[in-house]
Length: 175
Ligand SMILES: CC(C)(COP(=O)(O)OP(=O)(O)OC[C@H]1O[C@@H](n2cnc3c(N)ncnc32)[C@H](O)[C@@H]1OP(=O)(O)O)[C@@H](O)C(=O)NCCC(=O)NCCS
Image 1 (tube, helix red, strand yellow):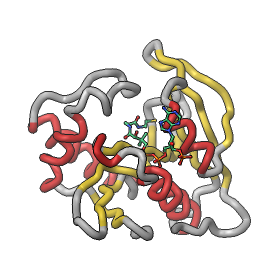
Image 2 (cartoon, rainbow, N blue to C red; image 1 turned 60 degrees about the vertical axis):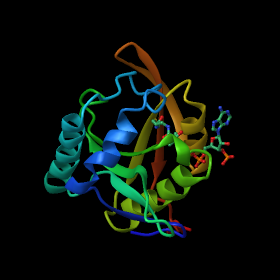
Image 3 (cartoon, rainbow, N blue to C red; image 1 turned 90 degrees about the vertical axis):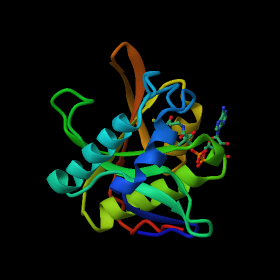
């Protein structure tokens, strides 16, 4: 998949070093349970976990690659989420970027493309998302891409906002 500025592709085994840089940063993990990874082996485990989801669920997060520089910025996209909400498996939209790429609209641009893919290619009736209540950037993005706040819920002692978007009548235009 591509947007104006980015290529969205499967995460590959060769991305382990980039995943390590992303997930070992404590700031990236501020609203993700504060458990940054410590080793390249953990990063390889994350890559394998995501690649298993491609096989099992037909979808998983995508690597975000800058078209101009070919840099790996982080990941964005859809995941079939079976654990977060008890007894309610759902398609989740999410994003995680290396800190040096924050504040440039990367998450918004790629999340819009992920919604378009979910509705137009996977024909999903609805897509959901969850964000820590204090994660201002993430809550702002979810609202900006048209998701509607439904409720807050608790997970591991943390309050999250829960959002939903239904498939629109007109196809979503990705940039
Ligand atoms: C969340 C994250 C993906 C955002 O990526 P990004 O590419 O910087 O996001 P965008 O630039 O598309 O949009 C962020 C929006 O939040 C706003 N924002 C960010 N921090 C803010 C703050 N502290 N107060 C108010 N607004 C803020 C930005 O101004 C922007 O809004 P705008 O487009 O109206 O200007 C990135 O910060 C990240 O990877 N964080 C760590 C992982 C994470 O928390 N993931 C989400 C889990 S739910």
